[in-house]
Length: 187
Image 1 (cartoon, one colour):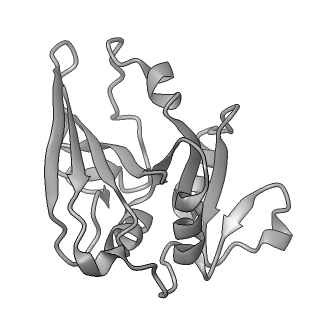
Image 2: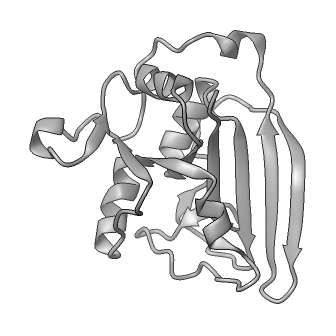
């Protein structure tokens, strides 16, 4: 089974974007091998708000990686070149995990992460903690939500930039092993 991995940069005070979706505070570190990271994935799950922010900042597609937008408001008929998971998104994501392929990068955003985590669909949380305090913005884990147990599986400190990479596996409760029936959140 494929894994869904929430890989994200966050400020030390827990924001994944500034108040207007800004990401200019994210530090780049030459020690991080982005090609090796991208090679682990063949699918991106993107929330509508993150997708719209990517367009504003010139984000585009990545060769060999399929992008899926999760949105209740975007209509596939209005966007024929995009793959959109809508009202039945939790079931669609669960089905996607069952397909053959590489891991799935839960690319954004916080609301989509919260929905998929609460449905028991997220396998790991991988946060690159940036050495910055934003004071406000889009939270890593917007509430209200149920508590989720995590187990630290890896950590790395990038001394030249001050980034701390943390990887956690998500503890699965027996009730979360069932396929979700509820409708998903996310735009």
